[in-house]
Image 1 (cartoon, helix red, strand yellow):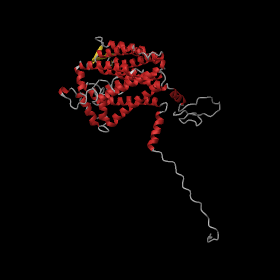
Image 2 (tube, helix red, strand yellow):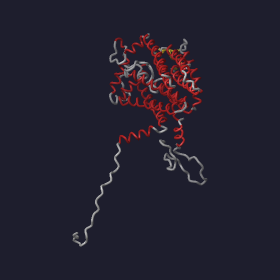
Image 3 (cartoon, one colour):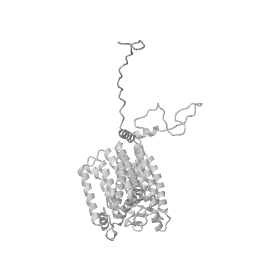
Image 4 (cartoon, helix red, strand yellow):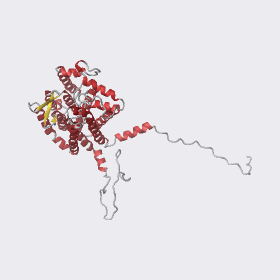
Length: 450
């Protein structure tokens, strides 16, 4: 081999090895999906969704009630903030009820089932007594409690049916009686029909539909056979058709589905102007307080049709945000009902979720022109203290049930306050230590907890 110019043998270079392939880049969408899955699977997810979602809906509802009710209040020679102040007072009372319900043990919830049912039946019967009951918009479903305040007992009938029905079905399941159809139906269905009869005496078809949805939700959770479920549904549908056919007002509301013109005698005025309000909002709306339809064109702008004013002032972004909050609340309720082993918690959580979801669908569907106008408020959002108080108590039930899950209890127990001394013994001369949100690395952490 020839030498190099320096006289030294040439240095043989080792053959270059191919570079090891680096780790494949993970798809960012898959990574985002995995992180979202981990977040959804955390034990406190349902708790935060219920607490945060209901708080956001209530606060946004207060803002929209103030915006949508100013013109109506001024037309009645009242201060512009009149309806907002009443709703704010109801929200404060409802917040106290929510806090109390969220801290009550399950046994106390079950103990309240019969007193709430008896009180609701008594008040609903009192509505029909001349001189005590009041008629509002053609429905005899109100009681005056002094001054400008009124009470609608049928709203508390929803809460009564949920609690009493859940307690009844749970006790029968503990005794293994739900396999017999007579124990599944009696006395649940007769009691529900009694409540429905008291409501329909006042002509409130919308609330009756919500109570029927709660009844079907309880039967579905109890595992009613398809034939039994279909039979009860057929009877309810037949009664509904008879009630609609025998009322010219209900027939007119049914004819306004999908209407784009007020029609003769302006029978579809409210439905059409609700569509006008949504259509004029665009993507981001005309601005908070800048609605045109609330200036006397849209009836019930701060109650049944507050979603239309929301679409006009906040646009598609605002309405989709409201829908997302209700969807999150419904998902959290289903999750609480599906993960518990307590039959009462399952039935009660499922009943509350059915109640809020069905009422939101009926209200929003009517505003969109997809369903007949049933005269039911948007839960936690529309003006009305009688609807807000039992709904916030029901939200407190969901919060209590979400906190009572074993994994959620463990996660809440591991949470430490931001400031203050740590639990545990400390030497008399030991250094003062303060808690932070950061956990020690040696702490045992269960999967999915934060």
